[in-house]
Structures are given as structure tokens and as C-alpha cells.
Length: 258
Image 1: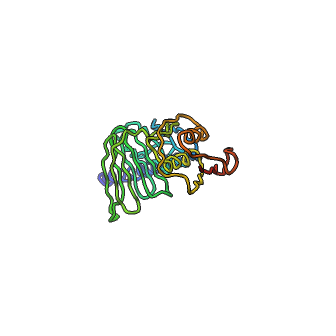
Image 2: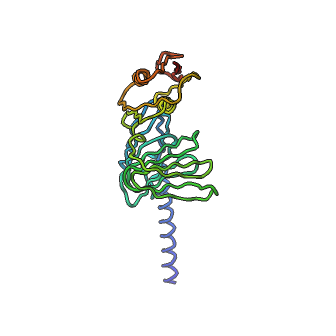
Image 3: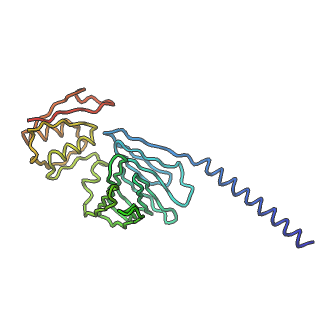
């Protein structure tokens, strides 16, 4: 009888403890709120997460993250481009979930991710530390690549293939510091960079040459200043086709001609 009474007390204690634990977990989950930061095209912003991690978010990008990290991992979601300076925590892995069923997993490091949903490629550039890039290969099987500092990995979500490059990271990270860097950059590539940075659309006339290239670094310059540099350095000319460069929801439309 005594033993039976002890077991009954123990059972009550276990049930009570279990309910308490469930209630605490539910309470904690209720207090975890997801936050979303969207950065319009042509702009950038800085976000500090609950763990002290700093994130620079580029234009046309969305970052979703919790107001606090309560689980064993620190997970955020990115649609677009962002630079992460992750606060080191050996007990909580930091995970950036991106489009196309890929993810970057780290403990503490500095890296850049470019992963827009409308683009096929996911590009990761590692500055410091170590990251695991996880993706689905050509056979749609999970795979991962361990990256080292000074490497850029390009993953094509359509064919599951990856390419690894060596880079200083200067051009890949230039957007974070408000810089535009041309290094023997072709006119077409230069205009693609400007289109992303300033939310512009370029209409290029057929007689504009393809073989012009440009080199230069521009810090916190407006679109007109960069286009004027291109004009001075070549025969290329430009003019507004709408709104004279006035900021608004509509893209700035510019004609490139000779």
C-alpha cells in the first residue's frame, strides 16, 4: 500500500510537471513574434537582431526574423541580398533560409548572400569564418559545401550545379558601403549594376557599341553623376524618358544612345 501510494504521488508530480512544461513552452512561443523588414529598390538599411547580429539589407529585399531566438537555432529568412555579421554563439547555429530550398548555416561569421526569388542563382560570398552552404544537387539530393574566407559560391537552382570562385569580396560587398565599383566592366554590365542600384530601366539603342568598358569607384554618388562619367569616358549619351529622375514608385526610364 505504501509503495502504491508513492507511485500515485510520483505520477501526479510527473503529470503536473509535464503540464507546466507544456504551458511554459506555449507561453514562450506566444511571445516570439516574427518581424519583417522590406527595403525598397535603390535603398539599403541596417538591422540589429536580438542576439546582436548585424544585418545590412539591400534594395528590393525582405528579411524576416523573430524578435528573440528561443530555440536551439537562430533562423532568419531572406528574399534578396544582405550582408551578415553574425554574433558567435557555439550553442546556437545561425541559419539563413533562402529561396530555391537552399540555406547557409554558421556559428559566427561575416558573409554576403544574394538570393532573390525571381532569380535562378543564389550567390554567397564569405569574408570571415566558415559557412555550410546547403542545397539540392542535380539529382535533387541534399548536399552541402563548406566555404572558406575569400570564396564566392554560385548555385544555380535550375540545374543544381555550383561554381566556386576566389574573390576579394570588394565588388560583391560594395553596395553595403554605398559604393559602385567598375573594373574593366562592360557597358551592358555597368548598366545592369546601375539598374539594380537606382531602380532604373535602360533602353539601349541598337547602334550603341558593345565593346566599351569602364573602370572607377563611386561612393555615395547619384545616378546622374555615374552616367555623366560614362558619357565623358565614351561616345555614349543618355537622357530621361520619364519623370526626369524624380523618385517615386515608377522606375526611372533612361535611353542610352550615341
